[in-house]
Image (cartoon, rainbow, N blue to C red; front, side, top):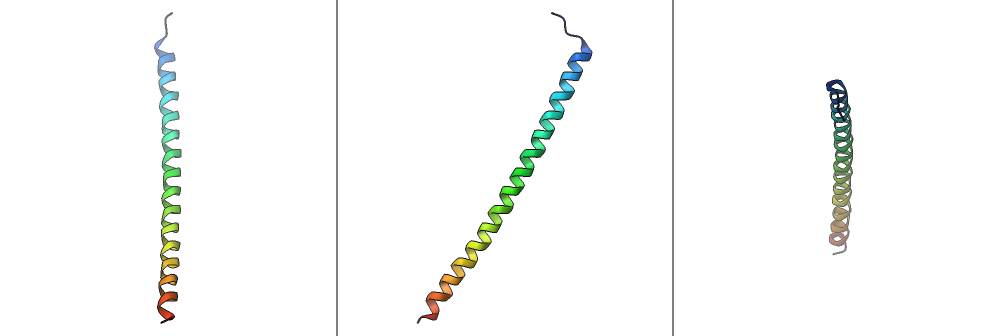
Length: 59
């Protein structure tokens, strides 16, 4: 079976575009995960600070 150059170019074009979209999605989700991680670290620091002050105020 022969495949023409145009069909190969079209297939490559769609493959390249789909991988770019997948990369964009992956980067977006990675940035969301990093944002959530930073938020958790921030809230964790607040909680540990409150625990520390709570323990020190009892003495």
